[in-house]
Length: 257
Image (cartoon, rainbow, N blue to C red; front, side):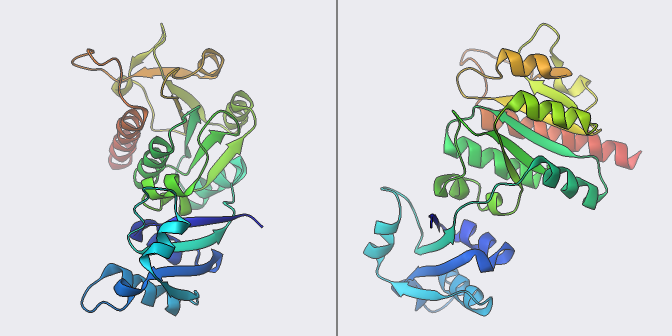
């Protein structure tokens, strides 16, 4: 059976809080598990044991061998089952349960796992109800992604789409407006668009951006004004954070009016 090794204090802490039963075993560095004072690894090991997780102490070199070269595991590695992707219905159900208009982030070909993790983190903290990623030619949810997300991949539903255009059509049929952050003749500054309602926010990959067919499927096109363009465009994870903040700002303003 496929397993994942989730590492890092933050990601593993969120996993223990959200889904302790998904952890088959938690390995902690012996010297840190036995540390006195306020060592976060010792505290995490105690919390995990209290949640019914099997905790085993291991030498630092053994933890190093469980992770990819150069990984900063911080003395903690959780062995879990294969990542379980959600479906679009679960993303929409999360919004319905919260009683607010759905907000879904759709990523068109983001290939860097660190960018993907950063976007998932921003999506979670800024109120999105899920993220949709393509099944092919894009980063998947890996331990590196989970580490970059600070554990948000364990808290936010993430759906895998065989066809992004079809997924967008399904979201539109469910009542969501679709907005691509992409350069297009019809693109307008993001702050001038009404993004407070049910929304699918679409962002493209690091090189190509939002593909033409995907952009054509969207109802709106947004641009993020830049004071200087000497470096081309914004990093996709930065653009996602700015766009999600604008959505959150508009929703807060509408709720307060």
